[in-house]
Length: 185
Image 1: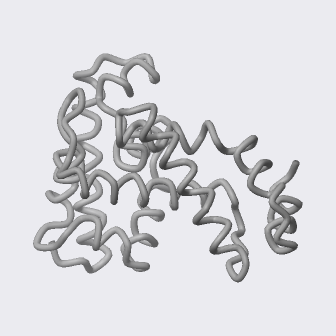
Image 2 (image 1 turned 90 degrees about the vertical axis):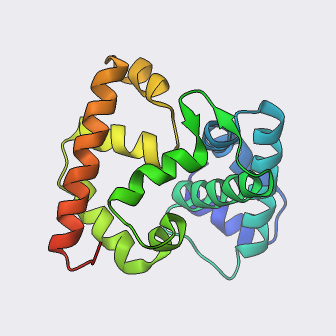
């Protein structure tokens, strides 16, 4: 079922909207949550919480992309769960360490807070649009999906060292880009 039909089900308050959303995006939401929480059970719970949140928000919200919408909600719920659990260690570092990597680009403020601002989002979108496909995928996998360097290296067919070097260079480029856009870092 396409997204527009699913959204119409939400507006009609038809509970089949939840089933259709789970069928279409459940695995996607669990992927996001599992990269953050590293727990199958917590990922399932987080996905269910995201479905409930979507049900509560649509209407009045009418997302342009249901996939992006539920992905953002899932990520937010998973990150809040991590904060409540006081950060879980996972292979290659903790979630807070992953987000701290970005602090070289966005210092003197909380990364989560800064990334939530509209202007920062626009700038980061502009930065990502200027990257080649491989660099963009690696950046998004690390800083959106919170994949470990080892996981990215397996998925992208690269060495872990190559991934780490590329991420370091991308953070440097992002910092330069943001400074060029007028952000004081």
